[in-house]
Length: 160
Image (cartoon, rainbow, N blue to C red; front, side, top):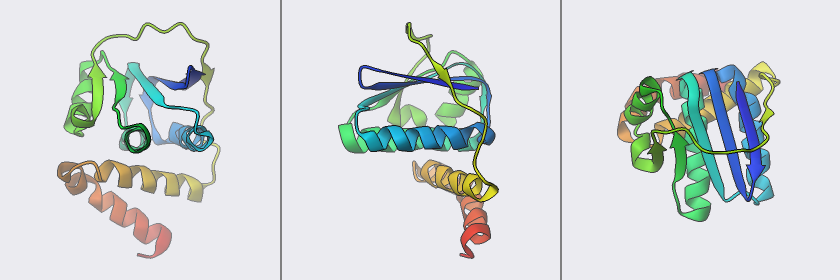
């Protein structure tokens, strides 16, 4: 489950339970729409209720970082109190590009829930490919780990 809210030029994302690729299509669409409007200058990511996050979810966090860093030259904050989630973030090199806070955020905002995946199989596959490209591009270790996934998806989708 992914919930979101916009307040004071900030997008707040609240991830709960298991974050899987089936939830990432609507998240990707939300990010594209929010970033296209140009009003969001900050993103806060709350992973304190998440039990797991897959590589597609990590790739979308990388997309957030890329947008915020390129447009506003600052880091995005991720809240994580689950040691397994924090370890996953560290392993992916996120501690170098995000501000990881090991506490619950103190936010009193009304959140909306994103629906499950609503895209076609091809749209979902394209989103997964782009998320893995963003994740792989973060550092050499991620490139080594995810280049096979990127290559296989490119071959399947584009014949490359």
